[in-house]
Length: 192
Image 1 (tube, one colour):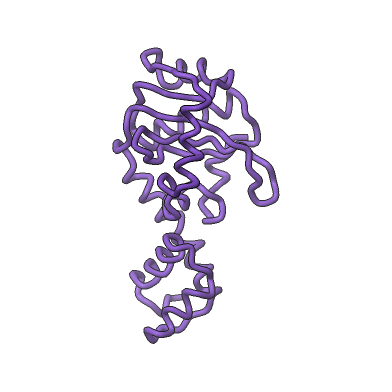
Image 2: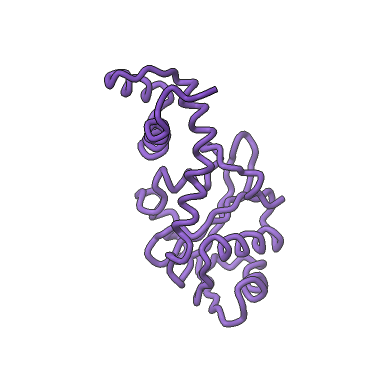
């Protein structure tokens, strides 16, 4: 089944959907004005097929470009009707380091998160600030090395709430690399 539209148009539709939080029905209306007719179901199919590639491209562009001071936090959210922990890290400038979903908040999940963050970014931080959860000190030593300085502060990790609610940290397109709504292979990034 060949696409009726050039791949750059399809990519633009998906990019606008992710970047500007447009509904599935908004995009066909916007493009109908430009003489291109397709259904909201086509948008859904294109998003399912292209989002993983866009997300992987964003991850590759992040490689080696994050700072060496990381702020790590986890929060408990309901995703697709199930509660899970979301491990997340940003650097000193608010750039996204990595995100990981886990059913548990334990040593295994913390190790999976730091291993993933190091692999995705290609950077080992000099300093990691956490909320003081028991699994972090040992995990940081084993996964990142003994030379990494670990600070604990409940208040320094509040930067997540500030950045998240002000919209400075996670752009909708950056969220596509981490949030299940975008169809990015959650199972591959999920630590049981």
